[in-house]
Amino acid sequence: MIKQAVIMAGGLGSRFGNRTQAMPKGFIEIDGLAMVERSVQKLIAAGIEEIIIGTGHCSEFYDELAKKYPIIKTVRNDNYENTSSMGTLEVCAPLVKESALLLESDLLYDSIGLFVLQNEERDNVILASGKTNSEDEVYLESDEDGVICNVTKDKASVKNLAGELVGISKVTKSFLNKMVAYYDKTRAENAKIDYETVFCRIAQDKEGGEPIFIRKIEYYAWTEIDDEAMLERAKTLIYPRIKENESLRSVRREVLLNPGPSTTTDSVKYAQVVADICPRELEFGKLMEEVATGLTEVCADPKDYISVMFGCSGTGADEAMVSSCVPPDGKLLVVDNGSYGARLAKIASVYGIDMDVFKSSTYEPIDLEELEKQMQSKKYTTFAIVYHETTTGLLNPLEKICPMAKKYGMTTICDIVSAYGGMPIDLGKLGIDFATSTSNKHIGGMAGVGFVVCKRDELLKQKDWPMRNYYLNLYDQYKYFLETKQTRFTPPVQTFYALRQAIIETKVETVEKRFERFTECWEILVKGLKDIGLKMLVKEEFQSHFITAILIPETPKYNFNELHDYARSFGFTIYPGKLGNIDTFRIANMGDIKPEEMTHFICVLRDYMHSIGVC
Ligand code: PLP
Ligand code: MG
Ligand code: MG
Image 1: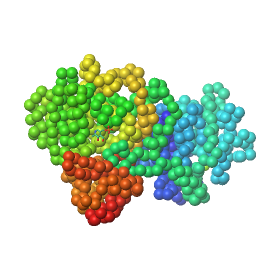
Image 2: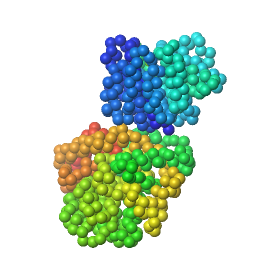
Image 3: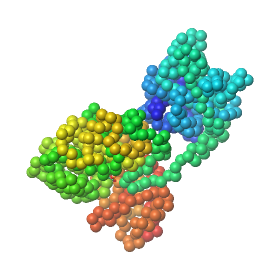
Image 4: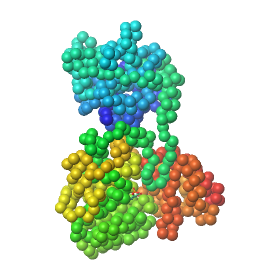
């Protein structure tokens, strides 16, 4: 999997005249989005984690873009006026760690090209297309081994045409180093050499060179945009074709308003489609290691914390934590103010763990004085609580509760399943020792990976404890992975690939912005409910913004199944929720939901409520 991309964007774009005098060419918009920004979005969707943009002319535009997309790093080619793409590539090269995709900045292309290169077995590959009739074609010629031997605009000079240069390639670090070394040697004669010409020189260098192959997609939808005529052609001919192709590949959208699994992006869905691999291969071990670190970074400092992953749901992670983290002769205090707190207590009771339960209202805040009294009264080793009670949408104030537990010397174990990734959380600051979550809630992956983010020091204390569990033993899972880069038992392979992509997308959006998006959706929801005349179970100020429990209207005409089916017919899935004798239905803000979709949902809800005489 390639993780870095380089975009060469130093050029003047002089063929555009006025239009690009005070703006780089990549910022020309098509369908309301700058070419280069669309390219960045496609790279992210293709699993790229870092984009290096080599800038020059009007570099400040790219620096601005980097603020919007934290995965972008810009490097300026200060000599852009006297060099060319190779000069820009040279300044980017030191930032490339392994293999990277190389792209020109003035491209409009079907994202499939990126996936083709990501899946190419050969290390160095140039993407080519069939005939484009663009009138600015760069022809590629290959030798009998399929290696590039000529790159030219002069078609007549080409004997063995391999395709037209697209401007997207994949190269190894060593190939790139050779390009830079070649440029360094020859710059005095030709400072303005193009990167594609250097491809050819390295490929044909019999001593010390390295082959680069041509991969042709015959009917590839793409164009570069060098002047007004090409821009017009891009808008009218190429862009519609790309849009059509990409929409044919997109998956029917269902908006899940249930509290997880949540709506996923298409790029997360597609990330699962990978070559079969035995999970005991080192390559997969590295992927899992990378995922574990990524999961930790969402809520803690990887210096102090480590994520231990299992093939299971969120409850599996809860069970691993509860059954592993109470010492053999320890005693647990569990807060139960909803189904998930009750579940933690249930798990402890099944394992025969000595325990007291602190019961509290499911929709009103915990009485902290009472809780502290309980903590003082008995000698507990371990304290368990749920951060966000998904049953009701009540957010427990862990910033107040966890320091209390620490004061009484307890190890703190928290179910943060439905808060993790949706709001900024810092386990270290909160004083949480173990925390659970799952791949399919706010982080936006597929169901199948449950994990416990563990404070390393606390986890190591479990080393000599007798095992109370087997599959779900936290220390054993940790130790085995540390030593082998393998899980003890078969992991959900494809779910890990999707999770890797979900983590990238979380980093790109940032948890802070994700919380803002959910809050925006929640505000639309709350306003809509008020307009319709529906009431919420939990007061607004105590709500998480992630889930809203709505009291059912007082009319015998209301029928959850009818509402569910009606909403589903518009692509929205809602969720029932009965709390004791209080009947509610629930709407979650999780995953890839957009404010405009919540607005649409409100219309659907109003329509149904109107049909039964509520409004
Ligand atoms: N804990 C909380 C707070 C949850 O919201 C959920 C699921 O909604 C779980 C645990 C259990 O997760 P799973 O259904 O994946 O077992
Ligand atoms: Mg051109
Ligand atoms: Mg160009």
